Length: 398
Image (cartoon, rainbow, N blue to C red; front, side, top):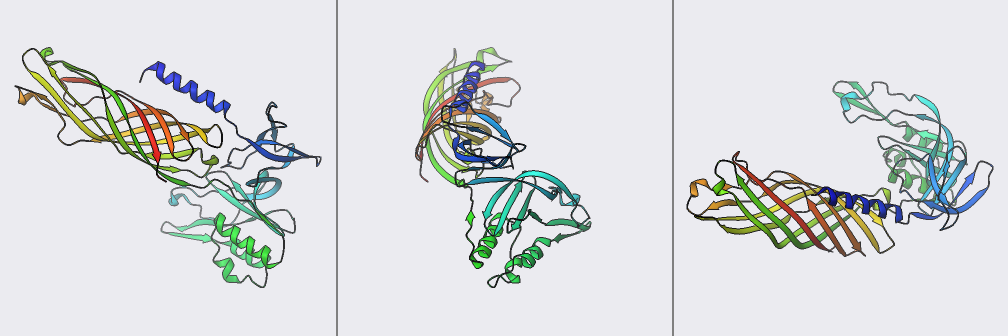
């Protein structure tokens, strides 16, 4: 991939990123109680924010507001954040369970934070999310939120226990005829379980309530990806220059099937990709005393990540970064006509690729993809340079 090509793609990505519309209808309430209706930049928050951007009109210059000046803000029907000063246990569970604390108790500190509203009613449910850990809070009749406490801890090097204090909190403080101890015991420390419990309590007490759920959900797409390859191959033999060969440029067909998992956070702008792709490079070249031929048919195995930039409700641009595993090929080799002992089997190295594309609606897409050059042989005497550039069409089945 040339430096010019890379810089061009980066420029286009930056331009589209700045141009895309991200502001949605919302409001915020300042410290003095004034409510401002405006357009707020919907970040699809994965982490609890401390600030946000807003505009008073579509053509207005974006402004920034922070947790110091705003006590509540909302975007559409999906996100609502309220500022509270709460006692919070900041402990998060390490990835390696051997590093768990042996202390089962909470260690509360006072923090002023934006809590995301999940259920709002007589009994309200809130979430504080910081990626590596999340904490749930609740209020009853608009009191100060209290943390629903849960913690895994180490008893000894082989035993892990759980402090499920939150279940006792639910049972003791949210009593109702239709809610039993079993309801509390069966509530796991997950968003959906808590939402279900709080909805049941508000229904049981005949209280009006509202549930705020993120509109973004994880999705799976399967896409047919035919296209055209523009590739070339040259081989240099450091021992015998008479066996150098330049097969030149070639245009041929490629076909891939892309499995894409669109992630739920950040408004479905990120996804993970896996695209097994059939490709080939077949060529024959006449040297002075003999011909040399290559039949390189292979299945490419790219793994990657994609980011979408939304232009409007139907159109979006995307960029891919891909890591390509070692190709699957069977009998691919460089074949010298009269010197079969000097034939060389193809052993491809791993490589990288960068793609820029456009998707219209739910079905149709188009992409240009640039690959880093790679060597096809492991023999020390051969220096090969395989170049590849692809234009790809896509049709999403589901």
